[in-house]
Length: 155
Image (cartoon, rainbow, N blue to C red; front, side, top):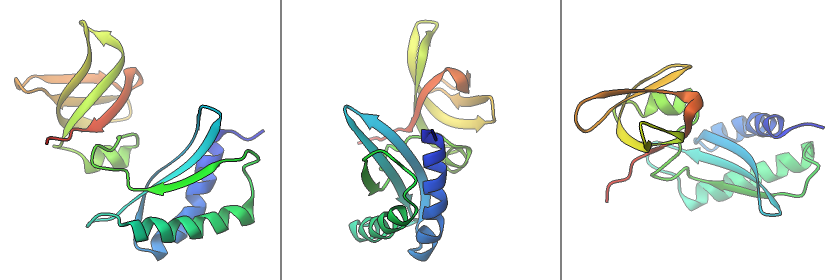
């Protein structure tokens, strides 16, 4: 049986020409189970922000493409949306676009009693991310120990 990563990859491949046609970029695709429901979520973005109309057009086209390919055997709910202001950073391209931005980092296990950190995203590579804390100190974090990295929203 195919797994969630394959579903995400195949959906992203179907989404590429659709996104290009509507002049949006693919931010992420995820296939997740919440409660008893499966969700296939496509996050799209563009320079001046995504509109409801963008989401609607992409959703209809993606839904049609998924119906034709029919590679996901489970019943699922398709959602197409913007990644939002406090977007999660998962992929290298997300980290690249977010260099010098304020981020919030949640760890799986506390380091020196701390499980949540924030600072400016200074650098990243395959193994580590580096943030600059408010006091100016550099903090290097193993990516395998990070549960989540999000852009910090200041209100």
